Length: 208
Image (cartoon, rainbow, N blue to C red; front, top):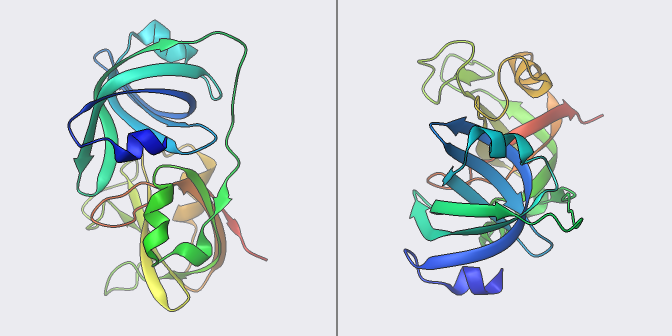
């Protein structure tokens, strides 16, 4: 992972990593969240048949070759190919509590990892006081991405439920739709980046 971090943008990289979650499959391309014991890799639009996509279950070990790229602060692997390494070796990441790292320079060191946040207060997502929005600007409808704001240690952060990753029928999507201003929550998700930290949340629960 250190070698990956040190690699230049747009250079070819090969990483051995483990599937943690699948975001989408479309036209023989897969987008997956992966992680090993040292760090995480977001793999965007990797060449993948639908049959192989079904095999990419959490914990599956894969060898990925692609190009290290950056998009609005999110460092990812693009134009990738992969092979499954079926040697019996699996890995499921435990969420790392990064609550106290919010707002710090060290947070980005954990980009794309499975993380948790504790004791956050739900804040208004717009001037009208909505507890969440469909799409970042409220232009969407049920089934679109959900965005909501939380405050912790005096700062406000914008979190996202990525609809391709966690659709409208998932527990987390419905939990966010039920949020009220002032609720104190814990959350888990993948430490995605978009113009700053923008976690893709996979679980929300009451903090008490």
